[in-house]
Length: 224
Image (tube, rainbow, N blue to C red; front, side, top):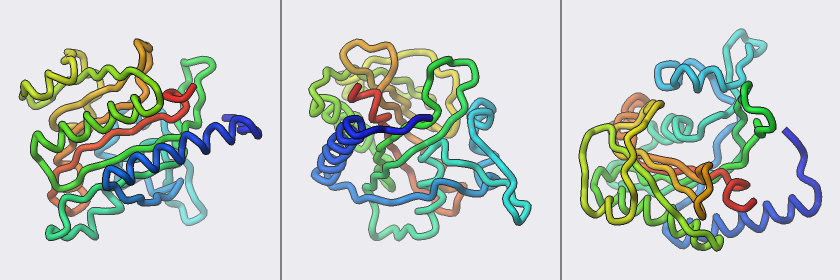
């Protein structure tokens, strides 16, 4: 974890503003989420590795709370009680820091600034294609050359997806994904700049049985 000084802050803010403009132009509205939340609602969702990466502590009331390490479940928990079927699909985006403990990776930042987007209430392949296409267009808007790889935990396959993404076989941590899961690379880099997928059962765990698909960019990975 480190501060950003003048030049780095200016670069980050320019990138952030551009992300926001791209997502708003695509019809997405912003939601703001807290930096800490109760840990218990996410206990059955997070993988063992995700739990190890999160920072947790006991607050003054004796409750276990966690510092934000993954936006997607927090978005589901926040939006599920308010969802009105007549307003679906929803298109929302979010931004902010996540903090993860990476004990075995020397030099890896534990605090990362992320921006992501979700399409909620649309189970169609068209929503999958929209998410993939939007993620790729963001990379291009920053002067990059996107390459998308994906798997599908449901076993489904579609020629329209194969036309814009390459299928891969390994998926060591499916977590809450129910369909397509993808990673976005830039200019042949080994580390993905974004990742996402479909999680049609996630909102149901918080009281709203609606499908969803989304992605999250780690901004510095794209703009470094």
